[in-house]
Image 1 (cartoon, one colour):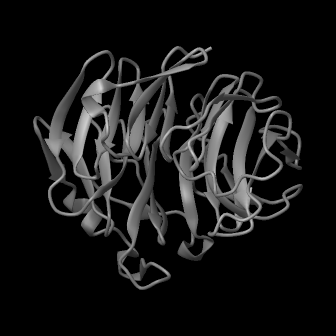
Image 2: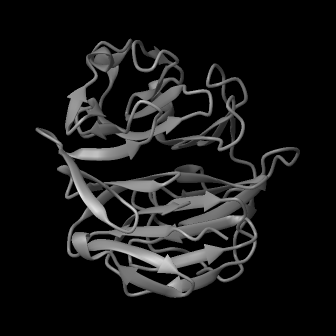
Length: 302
């Protein structure tokens, strides 16, 4: 079982150790926007405006100037930070430098929000071969195989992607949670197959790889009504099965992007009403591990 499980909330960062949660004091009372874990540390966007890193000790690494940060991902060249209005930054020393190539990404002029605001970067995934996949909401997924030097669209923007995820072991396998169901690519994002079989609804916000299985969150729509978790083997099976044992009949809200994480067969999910559920068998059985936390905004396991 993973020994480093961190829970980001609207009012602080918490470490889950066994069945106990402990606050990370330097970030107490601070809103955690997003988390990303790598081998020896975790990165956090705090209050939308600063980038921190830490393990036992936590350090402010850079300020996110201008628009609020929305997500963070680790790369061999340093962490990438996505922001509102669809900008991308890379940490260079003690500052975040904007990737000007992303400003020229093909198709950018068509990105939009349904309510009229400019699109945001919603999630970032980096495959084992270094390809960077950036999910723009709403703008599909753009990919760079040249360390950010250029960007190529991979998914029609009307698919309405909510999370892109790289398989932890297979460099060519990329997964999507979208408003149109679960997307799976076996060729590095060149093509995707979409699936909804077995789901009560096809609006997905989050996806995680748990060993040989994929776990997703599904609901009736952006309001989060009738929200539930499902699992399915990545190989062979075509239908999702509902995750029920140890979970509520329905969650009261969407399990959001970044609030579902897995490593091996361990899966952790955080809810907007401050509950943490954990599974040690790839989502088949669950236990309520913590409750009463502030609204959960991000979960990582490493």
